Image (tube, rainbow, N blue to C red; front, top):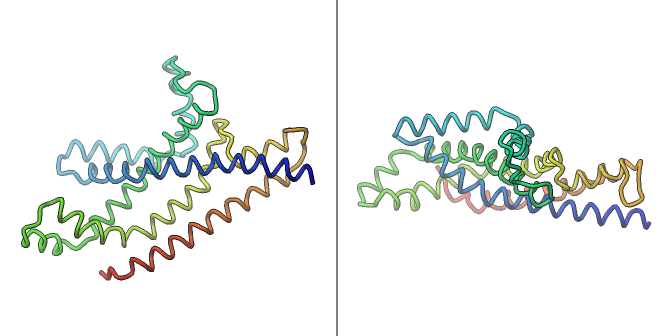
Length: 225
């Protein structure tokens, strides 16, 4: 029983780190993704090409590789280890890598949602004398949200599981905590069951998010397009 409590406490601490990374990623990636989507749709060709190239690179390379580059590149290549070796430095590096990665994925979802709104509705807004910002917030944005909820929910649930990749730079999230009892931690070693137990955390968290998104879709069902 004592062993179980030790493991549970360690997993809870690791899961709090997972939750922090998840929350910070969403807070940073959603607005950044919207900005990137505007850049990719820009009529200024050099800007749109630059943004689309950046999105292509980020979406076309593994998140694990991006984590390694963000964390190790400043120290190994630039001789400027800006992150340091502490847990806070690893968390900042992981957050930056996750925000950039998911912002690029979100940007494509936003772009599809914005471009999916019928042009006629935007033209109707212009006829009524609405400004571009009014058309976006009062017409385009509301319909875009309805369209992007299903793909966004999939990406956000994927983010829950992707946070486990941060252990590649030794961020002590829930998987790291579970795996540590195989190698030896707090007087416990050779135990694999804590690693499998971490799956319960992901299942519960993903289940809660699924319920939330299902309810959100129902509330937005009044937008029929």
